[in-house]
Image (cartoon, rainbow, N blue to C red):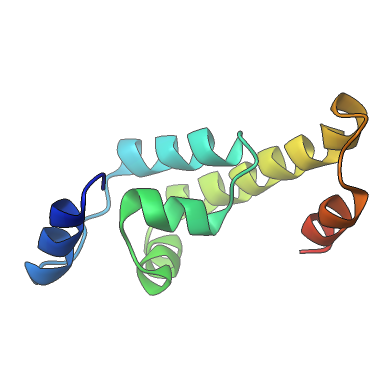
Length: 98
């Protein structure tokens, strides 16, 4: 959602966000391959954390894509120190623990 109006309309229309296999699996890949996480997905897809985990339970392909995306994201974070010599080690260590 790009605007305040879109945000308000989305959350006040009273209909749940429908799972779209191609759209949401693609979004997982895009965000996680850039080192982003579940919070970024929730914001971009405009869904609640509960909806996200309901989709994981209900859609096997989404659950598998999520697991793969987590590995992609971890790989990005693990190579970060090597690619950025003056990085913040404290921040990186905290992100790796989480």
